[in-house]
Length: 473
Image (tube, rainbow, N blue to C red; front, top):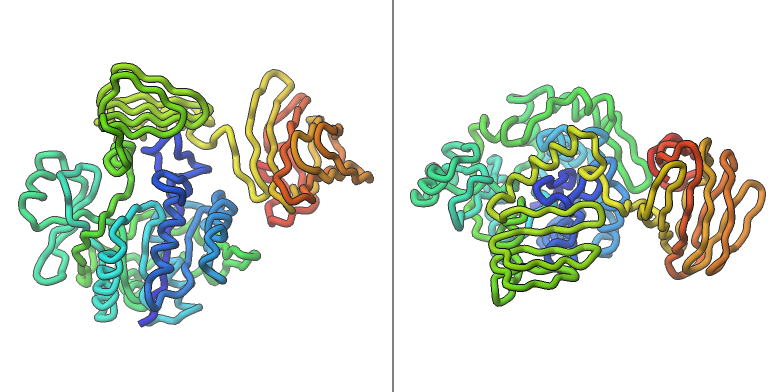
């Protein structure tokens, strides 16, 4: 039996705002422990016997962070990182991975599909559930993992079990009274969003029920291209693909659905309440992270990312502070955080999309202050990394090195700057910043000009394969 892990890493996790953002989503965050959820998922599949190097499906905008987190682990000499140019839900992602796997490992391989943002605490039980699911998949079943419910939960879909491993039905997220009845019955399991099926079986069933998805994702693979460590689905084909979940497109329709009961210490950490329930608590039931001072606080989640947070007299409350936003709400209302994100989107605000610190393939930058005709950033460049050779039409840039060594291309000149040295880049001048040293380079950049947005950039040379008129440097 050949197991091909497929890790779906394209979500955004809006209910964990303000920590999770579109450009820094949940699966890339260290929510519990020192690893991100993506990294713990990768460690989990690495331990499986007979598992091939993983296929990871990620959004185009997350490609460099995802690649960095995979390679930080040093677990896989090789892996496959498939990039979605547009989001088309899980059916397209799974189908695209299946077509790609058919080309590389054949139709008989078992796809083990795992979301990148789930927590599983019982590794032995997970391994046993995977083994059982793969056996069912070899018999021609489309197998899903049903989680033994620990409580009535209105945030999950449910699976009704039939005879043996058969699925009687899939049901949508219930109200509380219905969820309580589901749990009492012992018949219903939480729908985990994890699957195991043979490549051939999946594509055959998808062709029967959703031929347009198979047609477009086959074209997206055939017309796609390898770009260094990335494989890019063809954008035009994927844009035409229906936008459906794998549950709706296939699992709710097929007669081959099977379920494995999985009591594996599972959570999708889909809300701040879920994180509070899972995390280690102090003597008063509080989950605390960062620079926090509490007085008479009970059963609360208080998280400080950048500054001191002090709380007095709170109970059953969450407070999450980041550099540009603070969330305060009852823990019981954690599912409603997504409504705040929708408001931010409607108002066109950046806080749903990015943090003050933005991560790039060469390092990161942090916006410190902005005003009329000026903007101040702190830039960090990783050892050995360099930015693109670029030019701006509308802004001048002053660079002051705070730490490390900078190699600066400024027109025809190339100079080295160490700590407390500076240089000035005029608008229209080709320039490049590099870190030739062995420690991170940190500098302060002051931009001055009539237009200071990130789309004022023309790239002439870029080792990361980004488009000339990209939005970030």
